[in-house]
Length: 462
Ligand SMILES: [Zn+2]
Image (tube, rainbow, N blue to C red; front, side, top):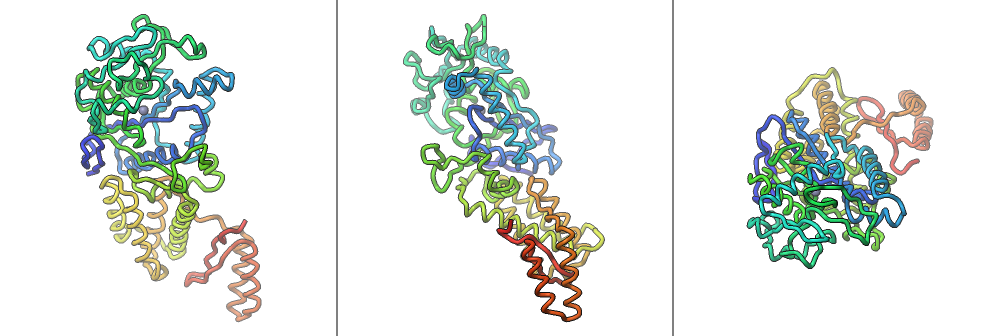
């Protein structure tokens, strides 16, 4: 049984046993290059979905793309281009970055602009049921006093809601300060704004929160299993989603589990362009591999904060290398493959950690316990056990997009190593030392094992 911490109830909740698990995660607002905070969120959910699927769970993973937003409109105006030209540009960069990071588990990306009829229909329902009101020359707003449970996710009262208004929700004619925009009429001062005609609502564009519930309503209906997203979206965004969908459908709960991922900081500080600690995904990938970043995310519980530092990146690289070297040596010690009990036992512990609120650090600790237990007697292992462990470990981490495949050792290096073996055999130690130096100069370390020389690329060699 897989249990996940549900933010709404505050308890670990069993993932519903359904033929198809429906998961929605809040996607990006496409107005700029995505940063590593975005990467942390989407890699964390990608690890989770890949793992669920490896446990033979059928998952439909849906993510929205917010392509209608004040930030997009402002940025497009600055550049003198159309809002949708700018949105498509950054959507393409986002998708390319996700691909580079190995985020491959999303089944469907849905753009807000492609779901305007669904959005209009949901606003209409809210109007008909008395949850929305019109402000002339401004838009349609959700009245939070018509949903007494407003605040239940973030544990805030309606009166505390007022600090969370973004520009689109700002109006001094609202009934309550926490009311939020469902549909915004065109602002005569901003002729570049996108707008869609609607006989029922009047021409306008959607608010932010309504995009998601209209999209999930279309794909999943009014209720589904898991809603994920970054922690900072809890309020007001997810709170507003609950209010909209439960008011529109009359059904509760909107979702069975609310799953929130933790913040990312850089060198102990919140990322910001003014602090010059803003790291884009492109910056990250110029310095570290996708596997190394995925390892960094894996090293942290998804709900814990992740402080990105160069030390952390080096630790992740080191973890990757330790596991890859271990798997490669097991490969040397391996004989004919046969599934063996020892790896199965470790695997059980590994998955048990993940079944308990997807505890990746505990699963990684179990991995290093397993490595430590086998490390010393590695070459005395039953060759079949070594083969099973080498393949098992490599396959297990490949599930998470973490690559432990040993690097290809070029023919030239292998040939030098073979000559060194010969000179060692005939006790020509001077020559054997010279050959070792030659290998080092070529960028390889050599270690003598009971199964022959083990070659591995040297650190900091290019
Ligand atoms: Zn969202």
